[in-house]
Amino acid sequence: MEHDPLRQKIRDLLWQRGLTMKEASAAIGRSPSYLHQFITRGTPKALGHADAGNLAKLLGCKASELRLSEPPRRRPQKRRRRRTAPPPGAPLVAIPEMAVEAAAGPGALNEEFVDEKARWYLPEGMIRHEGDADPGTLRVLRARGDSMEPLISDGDRLVVDLARRTPGTGEMAVLWDGSGLVVKRVEVMPHAEPPELRLHSANPEYEPYSCLAQEAHIVGKVVWTMRKC
View (tube, rainbow, N blue to C red):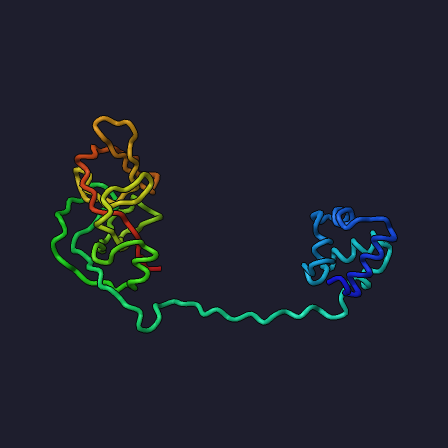
């Protein structure tokens, strides 16, 4: 960029006015390195309309003298292909949906997983790399209730990893709380004796409540939710 006529002209005018690039940048309301970047590195490729006008007033010339005769050419960008489905041939794995519902609210009594209701086919790569899970330990459950609104709505499907039964604070899990099968954000109460969990809903109308850790059967961590738009 050292021999570009326009940039050299600005260099000459700055020298004639006894101004540094840093001083001129500040005078036109830009960062101290703005003109240095423009003149020596070509960033930006051209001065904006307002910048050219302000700099022209500072340097005592016409704004048109500080603009390129032709707009800079833009390098053609490669269009990225938006992937909305797994590529052809990507391995899919079947995740069973169990005929038992995790209540996103109080009072639903459910037994252990017994019947397979359906199967959902998900990309194996997504499960392993995005979900950091083993496909064989995943199950799909259907949520009921509104206590986790707006995160989870009635009828949403939950992809639950049965291998993760020690959730950390803030993680969402499906668990038996002593009264029913629920999905909640779990808070591990520090220094509680005996060990205790605090269970939080997303819906502010539902108050948090506690249960003994030994009474809370953690079914698994919620990895994803699936819902209709």
